Length: 150
Image (cartoon, rainbow, N blue to C red; front, side, top):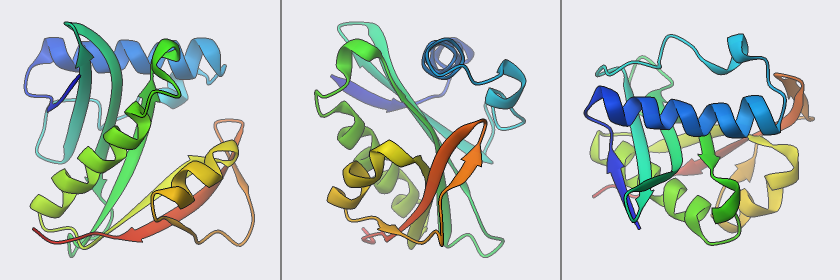
């Protein structure tokens, strides 16, 4: 298993295909809500792609959440159905954390689906939501974590 930063259009297309499968087809998120202005190769957004034996199996991305560029926002974490429960989600979060810290982020936030609350808490994230909220028709909580500086 290899997790890499996306640097080419074909890799980005693979990320978008995984997200389409997970969010649009499996979770019924409207396509117009799933894709946005960060779905391009740019310095404003770092996309990660997980590949196993040449097959794309997971993706995630992050952007700076604040103007001071001290907080990263992790977004669009998607793992192929066959790889759920394998530890890939944890590896993807850890790769996001390393990437964001390398770029100077001191903390990370993410909007995680409600059913994944325990998953994020086991990774050291704290729920900072007063109550669950709907995002694309799915209940979420917002989580935060301090990042280790390298």
